[in-house]
Amino acid sequence: MTSFDVAARAGVSQATVSRALRRDPSIGAETVRRVLEAAQALDYVPSARARALSTGSTQRIAMVVDLDNPLWSLLVGRLHDELAGRGYRLTLLAGHGDPDDVEEHLLGGGVDGVIVSTARLGSSLPATLRRRGVPAVLLHRYVEGSDLDASVADNRAGGAAAAQILLDAGHRRIGALLGPDDTSTGRERAAGFRSRLAEAGVDLPDTRVREGAFDQAHGAESLAAVLRGRHRPTALFCANDIIAIGALNAASAAGLRVPDDLALVGFDDLESSAWPIVSLTTIHVPFGDMLRSAVTLLLERIGGFAGGGRRVIHPVTPVLRSTHCAPAPPSPGSAAPPSPGSAAPAAGGSAVQPLPE
Image (cartoon, rainbow, N blue to C red; front, side, top):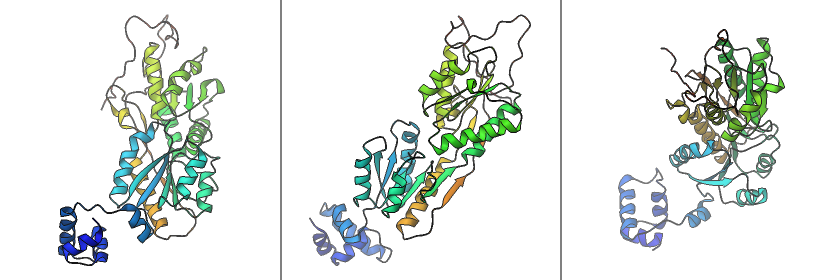
């Protein structure tokens, strides 16, 4: 069946069928109803390829994601719904695949626009998209000098807020499990955290800092390294919640009480961070607002906006839960808490207490 068959059954022109199926506001409701009933009776399915040829639009947006970063598996559903509400479909491309394959797909006219969520500071893809005139927006991370629109969180302010939480709780021996330095998120969160500690006169020696991927393995494997030595930290800033959950699991396995022996602060405020068994103090990132802003920026580009690159920076807010508190004073004659890797006590473990109202 073709659109001409639908037109004959509905008693309208083929052009009217095309506009009615696109919900063109110039077509009356009664005409749309007749066209839809005719299409259903004939089992007619519009051809996306034919529509793209006639309109010059695929109504499809590609999102370049890093499949190694579990954050995006939690957010792709929201982005799909946001695009669907505006008449677009979502295509996912793995950012850790062959760069030539990714660029070939994006530059071949198969999509109307691109959302890049995996950009590292040295990435060439944003500049390539800009140079080739492909509508694109950077989400969550940005690349200096790319002149692409970007929708990001205020990561520097968030890093400073995380430091302030620990300072307000009375911690002075503080460490950090930071993200990769070749991402804007990793670099800015670290810069804000370090800057606020420096303003407060609190040292952050290299022995208490480890840099790694935004994953649980980094949190779990780096915890022991930063807690070695006599003057180990009483509190840790983790550059995202996923790192913090890895550190929390490692602390529990080592018999450390959180927050009594070790306070933790994360970043992102993922849904799992609010689970009572986790109850992670963290920095809230408004991902929903970022997604909507990124889609708006991109659709404006697709619609013909030709101005310079725009960056929308979304404010972040501290969320105080149960993994931070003042460092516990040592009791006279008491033994130090066990170090990660030492034998765990027969009883006890991670003791997460809710904050008082």
